[in-house]
Length: 36
Image (spheres, rainbow, N blue to C red):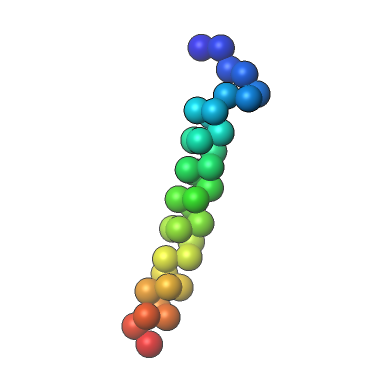
């Protein structure tokens, strides 16, 4: 496995990880706001 700094697959995984993490963090607030 040859990892390069400009690997689009790695960038996609990092971006997907950040997006999924922020969704998990903000989802309870959104649900709480919708229920009120």
